[in-house]
Length: 129
Length: 129
DNA sequence: CCGTATCCCTGGCGATACTG
DNA sequence: CAGTATCGCCAGGGATACGG
Image (cartoon, rainbow over the protein chains, first blue to last red):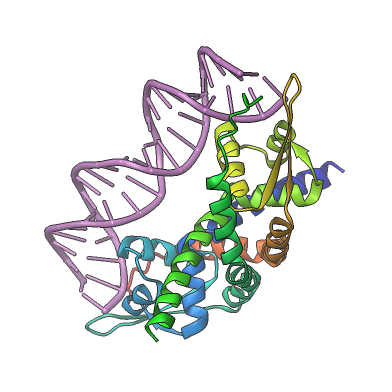
């Protein structure tokens, strides 16, 4: 019973970690780019993602590699040639995110409307009457 | 044609915004908590989410309200009584995230293994013969 | 109880320069 | 080309105190 509690606590902990790792902005975009383009080189990936600094792209890719989401293949030539691709696990995560991407596409207009309505709302001003 | 290009650019822009808003750590956890518990008061929500500061919870809820994901109901009594619940749109987003949650649960162990293997990997040390 | 306002500080991130 | 290393900023977010 304590085991069960500890297990769920550990799971909860792990879930938090995974959320932080995986719901990261750059991670999602890299996942998307790699799913769409297959095996891609570093610089090309930076173009595909767009607006990412070298530093953040490197950091993101290292983390994803560590988590088993991408494989990094180094061809020891000059100039260096490094390719990234999704693992099966990375691919499955990208598919899991598919629903979120679809949601965003399907609802972006409604969200925009909701924002405008919210911003146009009177600032409470309860004093009335 | 220019229209199409501009539209996709605007969409791309919106998608980035939505990703930033929606893939946020606290947003995901609030979404989860509200889906599971229905209509919930502020303090109770803080407990359910766990580890969130008042400031961040307020900020997250305001953003979600602005985006049309939650409705905020104020009962003007003393002491104040404020309840939050998902809108239909919020509920549909939470369902879209369902796949991600399932992925995390299903793969957390494999990720942990991947991390251990990665961390145990020799730090290149290419010099070896 | 449910916030808003203020202080404060860490660390995320970009920019730049350098290496294999 | 694909990184690592270093510097420096400033915004995110915690802690605290106060208000309706």
